[in-house]
Length: 377
Image 1 (cartoon, rainbow, N blue to C red):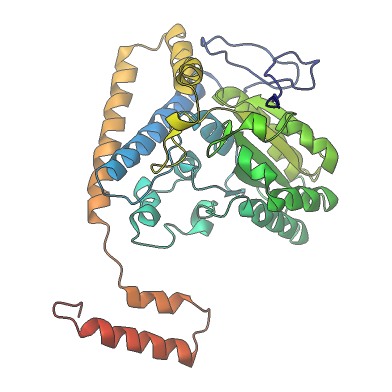
Image 2: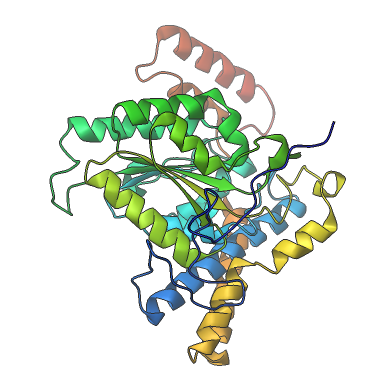
């Protein structure tokens, strides 16, 4: 039996598998009938800075894992444009629900990069205050965050934060997930609920072509964005390596949600250049030629080519490289300084209001721990 074939990528607006693109892999600006990037060249340079720093944070964390400083790391190499473009389209009152791979989203929402490391070093259960940054903690359970985003969005309707016409009040949520998650029941339930309740949520699928080792062609025979039709909501397919197109498409979908027009499913077609996690060997299930083909579509290279054509010189890029090096150095230093947790504190977070039984268990653990020489005070 032959393998099914996933829908091809096409920029032909008349095709049902149309791919929105505003910046080609060669760094050339192109027009689209429905979407446009409304920023100037300085805004593009700012996005490029985000892309470079997000990549450095990711590659530095990968190196830390390889040096034994982290137990695990899920690389985001190649997916920076999908994350930065969409996150920068959000307003301060919007709320993001990311996966464990969305390091660029956390960075764009103001999370200190060092706070990404604690979970993977085993020193903490979270990392940051979601309310402070408007971004939830990374979700490990595949697809669960789509239900969380939908529930939060339904709450926005109840509290009158949708469709008022006030740009400082109207809000939306955005749920990130991979192509593999679209096979999960949670995602399909979330799409159904969001459509029926007209929830102000954007579903952004980072289609990186692999659900761990399962290729996209073994997951679906149609474009993921076309699945939106079955739930009664619009679906948009965008070049996920084009930060300008991702920004424009997400900006429009978020505004539609804030205006009370309901949810949108965005399929950002990108590619996972590295392994699923640092415990994975992608060479066992994919061809090196495919990886090389996608390297030619690198999201950073195309923006750099555009900036060079707009007159940005080596000084700009050298200064940015130096900034990225400083970020990497600081991340290494902060990783080494992450304090080991007192396991007794775990008992304080089991219940909102602790129980007598829980306190007894905590006391028993502390007594056992303190029975060892050199134990914490």
